Length: 127
Image 1: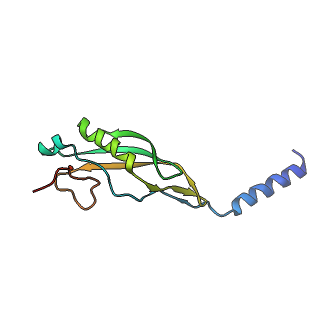
Image 2: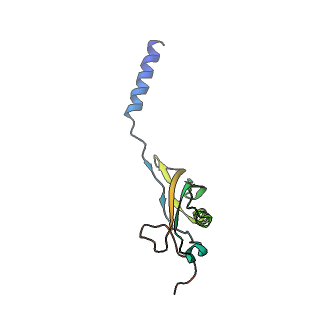
Image 3: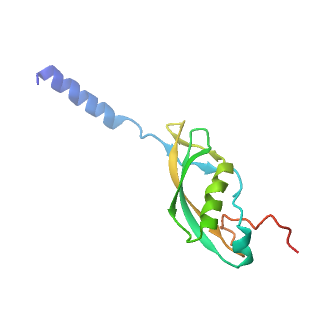
């Protein structure tokens, strides 16, 4: 390596160190949780939690879903996956530009949901 190349390489390395870090933000959910409690599991008093990995696109929609941890009930897992179609997000950003990002989404199905639960009662009217 000649002297000029070494000086240019050192200058480039110094410039890279002086750059400001790129600011990244996570996706932010805009819509309420749309998950429907499977009626047969509700009637049976069954509760559960499905953990999903979802890919939030640059447009803020969910374009891919996979079940990371099953609830042990196909009805809960299917309802969790189906509900992601209706979710809308402010997309993640990197340096101010929208980017796609995978995030973990736990979906809890509880008969008496807590304030933090991402669940809904079945569509049937309650007495």
